[in-house]
Length: 501
Image: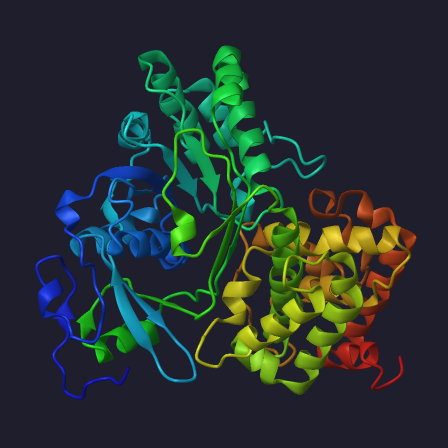
């Protein structure tokens, strides 16, 4: 699609849909006749480019008109997104960016966005409505209250303690879910499915653990009822969706639309879901989703090759002042580093899925990462490493160590992350705080310049892995080299371009 020069952009709203540029598809269904069936908590860019898009495709084909989405949030920062979306009737312009130029469509599957309240009262009432049959979530990998020591439920978190003490006025999404299910149990409205759309291994299993464990803290009978009646399907979600900034706002205006919250995305999109829905579901397979009884291998392939691959690139990219993932893939040293770690230390621990080998998927990911039209910043990808490394990198490290495989590259990835958290790039420029526990990470990172083991003493991240002599010695070797010779030099040594000094 070509931008129209001197075009006056049309403010996005229901009333203005007929006035949008003729070549931009928009809802062909009557949005006033849609009925809610889903509450989605965590309305970020990914949800709107992924789950909301699938529902929109069904609605365009005359299906799922009783499965419209009600957006929700539980954090104060969700209020700004709500304000932008409500002002434009919860419509979103999705812009697919590719070598052929951008193309856009307006999706309308979300029909409301609940107010953000400290006690979640409106959210609880909405989820208690019998019309709601699915509650879905994108609350980030670190938002599931997983104990770092054993992977169980983190009962000591202050927000969880609040929700246990005040179950009718919770602070967390999971507290609100438990409160709503308590109402539904009492009123006979029945259970709903809780569907995680976050990048977690066994995300449905983890969601079940969080919801049931939280309920058990204050109401064991409710916990038993939830466990017996609710569904928590595992799922795998896949689409690269950058953050929205000034360039994306300019892009949507160039297409003739004034949208305060547009979303750019790549052309690739996949959703694999365990077919386990206790209160029915939309016909998602009609929009291209894969419904299956075995999500695990799809999930493991994507998380280990794509999500772990992102961490391979992002930390060294930040240290070498490379702004985007596509630029990292165009950087000869970083790209070679990515391919070597992926093929030698990640692919061996990934099982194939139908019609796709791990090696072929790696090349597909490399191609997707290399798309210069997707301005996915290294900063965004590196954000929240304290959740992403334990979820994406460390399980592969453990498998490699158990198999007596090489961990040189993965240990270097961890050392580069440690060096990045010191907050200074190799060129001396500053890296702004980029993790919920950045101050803690920064202290450990700075101490590691003189004693690399200080980084591994973060047991909430590394657990017993810090005691493994192979990993610990390899990690310390790399971190010492990074501090003394620089990040690029350490990568050169790993690639065999130079010898250790």
